[in-house]
Length: 265
Image 1 (cartoon, rainbow, N blue to C red):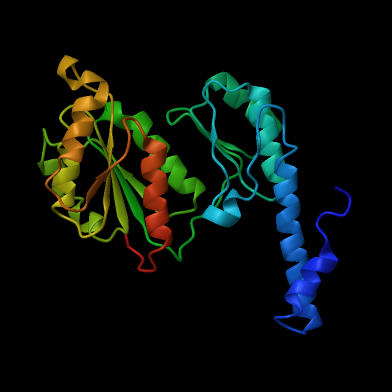
Image 2: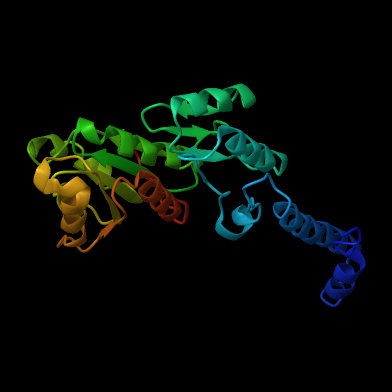
């Protein structure tokens, strides 16, 4: 609609709160821009209703799940986000998809292990807490890397601690002092998935358990690990879905960004 948003009506409503012209003008443009973004979302690329208001509501832009999506659709969504000043993030991409995205966005960051693409690199926000991503074994690397890249996209200071599963319990102990400074810890493990409980017994922060589908027959594609984490006796352990590195990293990132105490590692 040509008369949307109606700035006169917005100004009239806000004038009941203040008569400062500069504040009114800034507020009108802010609200008008927000409403315009909402309208643009209705006319996004074919096959996608791009939620450009997600960042305003939830703190971060809409994340693109790449698996099964046409590559040109992913590129168009990223371009729409870029035009709105948002840094896009894509999960579960193939190497072929990533190559096309890299051509469209030369400054993007592709992690082949994590299967993620961030539209641009960003420096960590040192005003928020730190997060550690801990993996039980090297086979858990794709899921752990997905969590790590999610945190990097969120600009959360983070580090990766690999291959410290319970089969060699001494390997974890040297990292405990660092883990105790974290705002949150993401623990990625398959097989019997006992590691989150062990980590949980050493730290005072939330532990986000991410079960993986790694393991032999009785692991049932990660169901055994999932049930183990859900049944953890450590009170600070929470669990996300099987192979859900993105969800584990994102949740930990939200916790860290709400935390003003910085860890050191």
